[in-house]
Length: 483
Image (cartoon, rainbow, N blue to C red; front, side, top):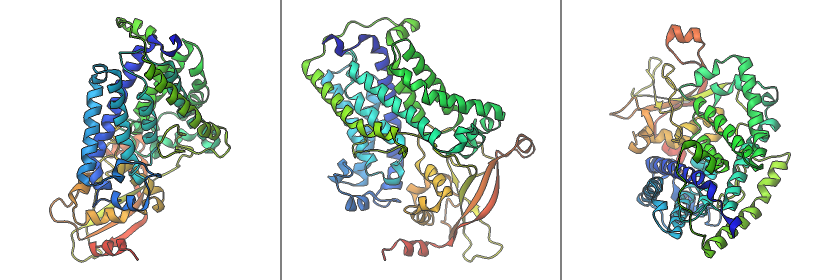
């Protein structure tokens, strides 16, 4: 079938697949480094406890067959190794069927982690990576030209990501409609980056222009992805530019980078190769019949599953970042339907005083990414995902978000649990554990340029009140015991 493949998109496929392998590598690396502390047998929300109450049909995962911390880490490092091999081009050096199996194994491994990841893996970009990874299974390798149907399904995925995000904004917080959301967003976003302070202090008229441009990029441009070339390539280029703007202004794990990659299959690869001066590869062989059948079956599956996210886009009660099936296929996406007007941060403090007095000195625990020390410049971590730091942001919004893991976290810090302490930037008690811990809620705001010059601080913080009263280890152990 001549219509089945499009050799012109060979470069688009190559860059997309290599980039996707790089994101998989980051995701598995993060799982290997953070999994034991967050999800391990002695972690904050242990996987065995989760598996005991959630059946396989609701969370398909290899770990229903067997779980141990060592097995979890081995799966994560296996995924990282396979991702690195595909990033290096191994998928183009093996037969088509072997390459497809490699991509399928990556998808199965990461699905297994996400489906036992609980609150730590409840982010929209987990589903986005899984859906992108599933489609990558059927993109083939250099032994055959890219299949047209899968290229269109990738555009459909990108459309849902961008258009869904645009709709959730325009239907949500009023500040998106009056163009004022960026008066607050750069300061109150989950994890500001090194340039966020500067973005926050841009002139307010420019912030309004940014919001208006965002509406155009998310509500108009995605429709153009389905138009003929070169318009589709221009639309993809606009999406790439807007995503790079978001990369520069904050830390959103691999969400922005994966969205950029999803735009590439909409770019006319032949013209891009000509502009870059790349030689056209030899004409690939005709795709085998079995491959055509598999691609047609995958396309039919995605089209059937598209009913629910398409209906969601049209619904006045639009869901954001929701999976309609436990395989995380054909999901709905969106971000920042509402924007916080102020930033509340939970600061954990400890002391080694055996008895608390009004003169007790409390020392702050420092996290890697979330604001703490007011003089520390925000760091760039994306596309790496600091899962505990992100959940601490949610905890500052409401203690309800911290119900399952905050008390266990305090308990781990009271014994200087090695795996947990590794998640932090620094502990004020590297030797002997503290005797007491407490948590306080602070209002954080970016300093003004004048305050920044005078004090060198990036943040100003004001105490709002007590988040957790002083506790000892015995008290955290009692609170974790079943009634």
